[in-house]
Length: 425
Ligand code: UD1
Image (cartoon, rainbow, N blue to C red; front, top):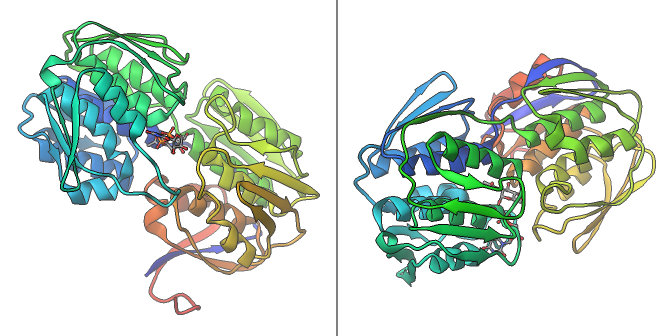
């Protein structure tokens, strides 16, 4: 068993450069399949989900090389149309390969993605969008079969909710369809904007990124291209929450503060001083944070569901009571029981969590059950007295490429350990 040993109670001071965004790089790696040439992608974080995407690309026949944080995908030859089950299971977002493989090879076979730690995550909107574009979708023996990729036709698609994944799948598939696709109620997340900019670097004709309507001129000839992935706004939100939890003064570079406004506005309400600069954000937080007004997670530009756990962790030590309403995923409070083990006072009723701030948290053996829940436990541990043993690191490595290194650079005491925790877990 592996865990992080975190000795809390140190202020966090210093500068950290935030790595590239997981939720950008994953669909961008899928999109490299559309171009039968070379895609050079800079600022690629070395995450286990990224390694899984690279394994899928290699399985399909692409040549993929790393040089530092640059990944080079040569998709000149794509020999297969399937994603093996073990890679599908490793990473739920591998479902985004569906639209890209279909557009590139004419058919795609993937195993049905299971539910995940955040509760059931249906893909009905993904499949309906592909069908609207002319794909035939069938389920056979637990596999999802998509055919008809050679006769895809641009059309109007209206998503019933602005799903990030369905927007990406529809967008990638529409790039391979004949004619114009108008995608209504599309997700507006910065990672969608980044994906469109990457596709444009390959020569794709797409307009409207960052708005609810995307217009895609399909079957545009694509060529080799180069792109730099945006900084990870959720990693940035985690480090800001860590500084609110432990107190301190941090300067984060490599991230666009405009993509963090809902998070920094709440941290300001909690008493932090925040300064936004082009490509960087500075924050100082002294003393216990205050409670903040009700927080509702919602699609961008609303408060991100991925930042909910880390903000909650920062507010466990605070003055007053904060209400959080999680509207996006039904099973996104799995970190709460673990936070309670550290002395947090949190009441959960369905999708509502009431966090009554306490003055002190104490270290405890805790386990991450999902990625951002793991980030939240690290945030709480940094503000707690004594030692926390944080296990479940495979979840954390899906989205944080350098959590202990970055936190140590800010003065935190965090070490990687292997063996048995004191709990004998
Ligand atoms: C992406 C992000 C994830 C983030 C989420 C919401 C990636 C790799 N992951 O996940 O980190 O938390 O956006 O910002 O980018 N839904 C349906 N049917 C569908 C698709 C979605 O009902 O076919 C529902 C989901 O159950 C959920 C909501 O739509 O309640 C939003 O999900 P979606 O935006 O699709 O999230 P993901 O793309 O899975």
